[in-house]
Image (tube, rainbow, N blue to C red; front, side, top):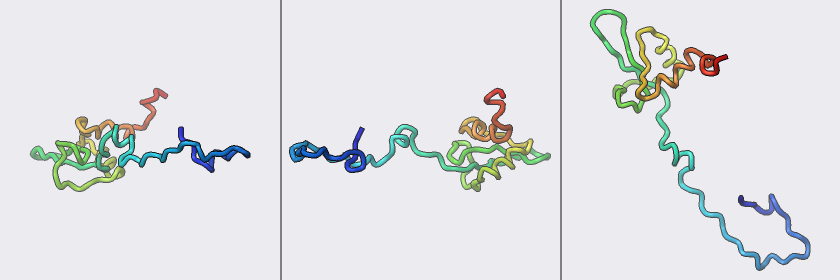
Length: 116
């Protein structure tokens, strides 16, 4: 633990501090420990890959933008638009990139997680 004077300590009257060894704090690391452990942050949002199978309603699969199955150049959807698209019965949520794990609780509520 580092103590930063004068915020945390005060000198004791009559004590000479000239001989107390001091070391400067090391420079802050260029990246946070969290970033180092978790890696680069995934881009925010979702993209829709449209699937057309002949006649019938349009179908699609929602992906994270960096998913290897996501279409390149597809428009980025914010969370509200992604939820609107996900409510369509013809839309599936990708399990490869975690889209399903992220959006399903928002679609169905959190009660099923806690059992309440």
